[in-house]
Length: 245
Image 1 (cartoon, rainbow, N blue to C red):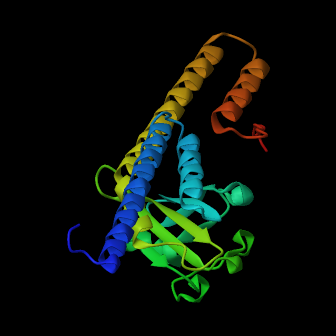
Image 2: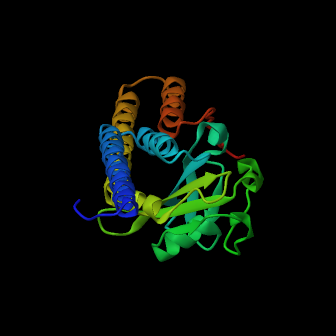
């Protein structure tokens, strides 16, 4: 550039380098988002959908733990349904009300919350010993909405080192939220429909057993087996009230 000083040229070079780095990061981000979306929408199994969300966010954000909480029990409880491998044993066992924790706050308000350090000191924080939350400094929670804009889940990400999460992380997850929410709701609907069809099939089989003219003992055994299969029970017993008892 004619008339430019060495310092001005250096500043331009630095700015160009910054812009190139930002562009490269955005390209990588888009590739990651596309891969994640492709993997999430490729299955209707809810467990698989949630697992893909955890794996991709853990890898993309280089965080130490990712948890997915679904809103259940008449919209009053957040239940952990997916987690990083280290905490997988807590899936289905960790729950909190909508009035508790950072995840509860995001679920109630529909807003993300980002704490760059000292997360456990936040008055909204709820501690779970099995999640080793005393290890974490930074936390990010993002609500996930379904097709009707109702919050259906909350994603929580934790890191050991402070200052790991930025507004850019919030923007990225928020951009994916509508697609993730639709995938979660579609999977839920698919599983509910499958369960109903399974129950109808079992009831049909039971009706055939009852009408088959088999002995009472055989019919009751078939009834117990059918109910056990329908409920997924480990053990099923039928108690008969004897005459005069």
